Length: 320
Image (tube, rainbow, N blue to C red; front, side, top):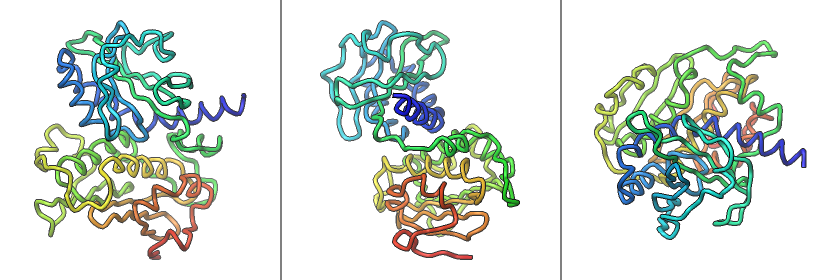
């Protein structure tokens, strides 16, 4: 039981680190729509893809009544709308009047899988009106050893091997919000490739509106109000060779690699929707090119345990 509890605790800490910013943004968009179940459900559908590993997304009022449909990756289920969920395990105890909480692990009545539910408070005009709930299957969340998790959660890595340590940058200081911005650009604003340079705090973006050129931005510029106006809204790239809902998973992997790998630091990372390639440039072993599918299929623990090796079946090319 102690081992199971440790595993759950590790997975909850990882989950909190990757969904905090997009979950806050998602809840903020729900407030003005709260009195329209149809519009609320549509908003949850649009934002579902921003939560890596999410299985189900729905809205609950302060009395525990489900006020939206249940939104899954490829399905909207209205049968639970209006039901009283106040007796569910994740609604017992202290509720988040601000911010987010994660439940203890429990058995989901809908999927019959061990599950964790994240609750994000929804406030409108400074009043708590309800919560957005997101269910995550425990088995779908990445597995971490305790040492790896400690590296993931450490704010500033300590280099014990005499190699360059991470330079503090706005990309590192705001990595959750940066991930949200890049996900939104890729999914909704016609950007099909980005190259993120952590140490120099630069981000290059390629847009289908001007595919022959790229725009180079300081990372801090991406956080300014109105930045999205530079890249008008467009449907998800029709030439993309990777599913739209895989994009947040790739950004979550980049974040984890940047924050964990203290002996072989991730200096830059890029992703191209059209050719499906991911590039990873580390501090001491050159640049690796892998397909997005292979990148996601490879357990993150592999990169943590053997950071300077790329297996032959995974690597397309390595530069030094």
